[in-house]
Length: 529
Ligand code: GLC
Image (cartoon, rainbow, N blue to C red; front, side):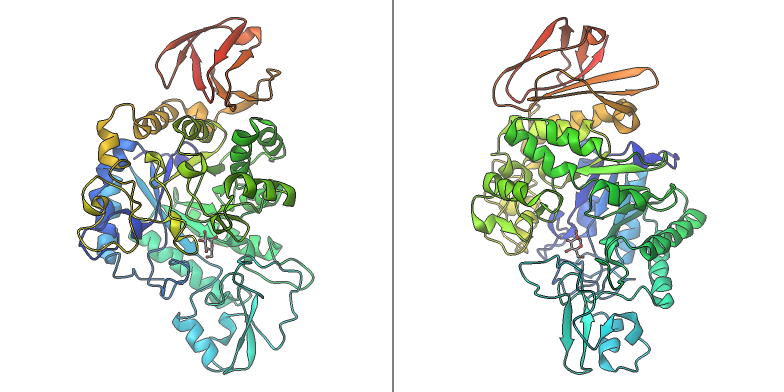
């Protein structure tokens, strides 16, 4: 593992639903020991850092994002010792591990909330946000629009409303209470002491509430997050905070502060625009959003992704674009949820290998550190029969044995039935598989740090169907050409890019003179020789 405290700027991340990854003990639930068994695989894929979804004890009404105990692990996933042992084993292979830190809310089964709702005079009353009326903070949007009618829920016993930005079973913590602020720093300390390399901080825009605002991205929120960062900087240098703020780039920018708040932030809006680009066969939406993305401090990095465990969110597009995306990518109503699409990468792209590779080519070469969602590296499918977002959280497909080799017991959710054809073992054995292409992309990206933190420049080629750009660092310039269209395209490149090039993925040679012919959805990562 490198000692470099800026490791995240060049890292490739891999997101794991622990429950769905690998079951080591036959109870049907994936667990920490299961991940440990699969570290060889993750090392072969070449990823640098795992992001584990919540493993805290939880009633699982929001898949673990509803936490009932912040300093424990749900027995279904293993023990604290198992976690420490997984971290050590991962570190020994040069792989880091970050985990979810859910600051904004707890489960309604957390002892703090149970105490808080038991009695108005409980010392824990002030841990949550209570009110006599549900008319406060009227300018705040509802996030889970399909299920929640209000951000306030009435509590019969104490006859007040409590505030929640997500499910009613996830009461928001009251960050105006200094005790709450301190508790959450202690939670961070607990896991950092166990050895984790940082946190994906969940739902951070919503920590504070203020009348007359939309209760998002408030100055108070930044003050608190800076405190958390200062605490980490002072005691755990090299450990990172990754910001989940589903916001426009200009609104995410303050979360980087002066390099003293988050190390990383998800770039939400680029994601749907990659899908738009493939459907419209045009690069302009990507170009536009990147041009309105402010620069960030030297020690910060964007985090990019194609899919994750949630719906493909369409919050960061216009209402017209959202409608269009739904029509194009989610023709059946049950494919939609809230403001998004509950489908995985491969089925979204018609299981078309060329489109899947092209989307990954963009992911791995545009600015930011990429995250691969477990299973997308083998083109796993989804199951839209399952409720909520569970259809994209199905068991990992390891091989063609029963239950895809995920468990020897009864899997917690049905395995997608294409597993005899789509599984890790088959793709590792097949040298031309999607797995090996993604593995090569990761390897190439790591060989050339220009992809991680080099400058990016669009090349104007007078053909809207092409996304052509360079990434350069310390005298090395890499030229990336993506054909977004279903038809062959010709690209004319400026004279300074002419000459002999090697294709870093296909390992073939290309001579660029006046123009270059590209196949449908072809991409090339080129380096001059
Ligand atoms: C984040 C998580 C999502 C969860 C929500 C509430 O957006 O990604 O899965 O439901 O926060 O915790």
